Length: 403
Image 1 (cartoon, rainbow, N blue to C red):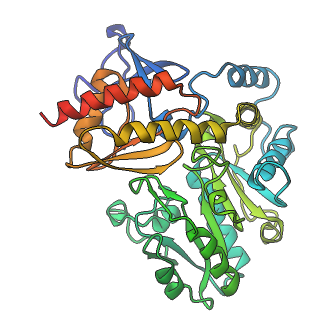
Image 2 (spheres, helix red, strand yellow; image 1 turned 45 degrees about the horizontal axis):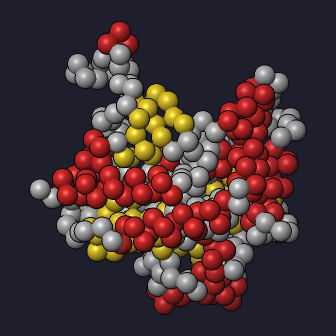
């Protein structure tokens, strides 16, 4: 164990020596957040244009969410799913309405989990139960990312992430993303039970589906009697300029998964399904000890209330347009991809990691989503002044990386 891994608290750093090395050694440790900014152990403030990978959409330490969590923690934290709690049902009703576009209920039911991977696990199990074991294959896309559990890893279309974990569960087939012909050819209704797609491939490089693609997938699924499942873990809850990414194509999937922004930092995920699909689950088919527990559900309920009050989708669309325009004018940025406030600046050289490192050194948090693309996903409450500041810091960081 190195000295950098085992720094003591008396030295003003955090002892990470007892944490498994599933992540690279962090370049910085943050100890406080406020709005769009984070403070590290040295007391330096950074502008956060990553939002904890799209999680803190209302910014850090949002006062209303913090108060709601504190209030709930002083009343009831946990009872298990053997009993009901008074918070989760209202949250489920709100999410069903937002899936319906915000004005009317969509007519579905929800299962609450703790993460996006768990939400996708629920979707996969639900699809197989719905298929009654006669059909079990789930189609997903090359470049997709659906989680790190064994089933969601098998659904993930990135072979490099599969290495070392074989044999993975069977029943998953990958096709080219945004390619209706490839999906059509693979969708054998005798064995395929569901399609699982992201409206924007976040971890795959911030690659959005073409307008009309999801509508065509909906039609194809209807024709073949196959479930259309949409992974909105990174895109959901206003990030793309709509409450959910599939709404850009004005369709309603059979199953929708979400997490990340749902609790504005509190671990909560959810799987929504149309009522007739959700009925495939029977008591005992699926469970999660902490799923929908009162504190996480209260955080999510308050997060959604604030999002609705500030008209979060409209804010994301407007701020995203400003950020996109600014990024497109930066030297060495050859393309800007994404939707709303989930964007990637594609560089003309494979130097994204150097750019992200230089940006952090200058006080801007972004990440290299591929070798040649930097991902930006600032909080939805980011101001125009903060966008200008972030663009200036990124411009200097690109120059530094290319010196």
